[in-house]
Image (cartoon, rainbow, N blue to C red; front, top):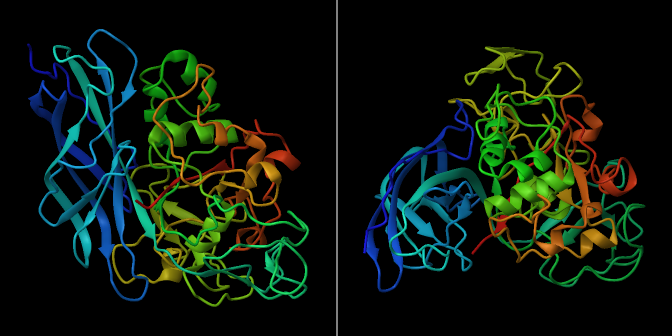
Length: 466
């Protein structure tokens, strides 16, 4: 029997590669074929900037979600590799965790620290037999990686106690609502969760709905043009046509080119959003998880606060090297948000992640270090404001495959009216950019319909922590 060979090896990092969010995958290779158990070992290196792990204060860390696509020699279909939950080796300084479904892996620091990381010699076990590959078949693989941030388990507040439109509150008061590891009852009295005119007025939140209490990993940056181009280029033409976004990419499939690879992508409707999450082995976040990711655990809210924890906003007015991979803040020097229609399009994801001397306010970062949650592009989340949204299950993630019509095949994600919008955009005024603004929490059901493709709409994904 022949060994599995790689006649052609191409590598793509499923992330942007700019100053603030530079992640690179290299030296991917297959070795150690076991024809008895039908597995081989896949090795790779991965590096990125601005990494951290801390056991104090935020008590969280960043990391990378790594997943692998393959295709058999002579075919055009890219399929998703299933990894074994054991039998892996992490590079020096790193730890690896493979979720039970084997659709990818998390890699992160194995101890507290801060700074750039470069993990070499990582090895995982690919169960190729499970994926329908025969022992004597030749395959090509591509390794993708996306930066993530861990949001730990813990109680947190919904609502700010301010004037945020439709912001969550407690009972008949304007006080924020404390989410604990307990059943949540909707209502307008006592300790009920009040949906404030946009959601249920009675009943309970289903136990499988991700309220944000349990730990999850969230993408550190918004989806970029390059990430979306990589997605389309690894679909067949029919599915790529269904998921293509208007007037962004040049070239032809499967060689579509992102003209501004680091720029946050817009024009994503709820169907495209769900498809990309599925293809990546990730899932959408809920609007409750959005507030947790912004505000932090057991942090008292500031009325009408932005994701960086206060009410100070300094809109960006100009950049250096616009549209390029090194696009950077020019004026004002203390800018921390892309809002107010001062730009005709989004800017580079993570543009405020300055290299030195920064603060949470200056970087426009959430409590846990997640970037641009309140600006640049509006982001798609699962709504808690309608029945379809509350049917969402947080323990089901993408399997890497799409249905024949180009949509996700994860049935709990296919009711696209369950999706809403949180956070502001480059065209929005500051009032739309606060943590607890819920005016668009049922956006796709209430306003334009599930197939709305506004250029101001993008997003990011999460995965429930293993």
